[in-house]
Image (cartoon, rainbow, N blue to C red; front, top):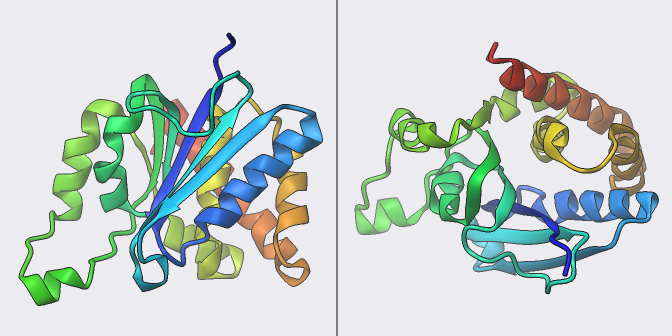
Length: 199
């Protein structure tokens, strides 16, 4: 049995998590690599937690076991903390600095960790924290944050940069291709800065 490269993508409803997983799947198809995927989510349209499992290669089923993910891509910082237990030892984590406060905080008076405390709690994983909202805005649309993070995470993936860029072009709406290409580039540069330690 061969082992897959496992990617867990997490965030909240409306952040483009399914699109991100579709881009990864398309990139695998371009390269002729086998891929399996699954998604689970709660009240996604109301900002509920969403996760997608992508397994590149390998012989096992579509769901990543706890402690088995090679890469965790978190489109929201609190979700990075919630799903950190999925990451394998020496796995990589790429997360947005964005913190979305759930509505339950206001109705149930729940205390939400601060951005600083979340980053501190993730420090042992040496995460690459990316200012996705700012980079997406620079690319032309704040809605491109998912592609920014995919670009940042691309340095860890067993997929070529060329196939990922082509997959982005195929999966996003035609009128947004240029914006998403720039978002991927800005994210890729951010990921390279993280890797070199010049965050």
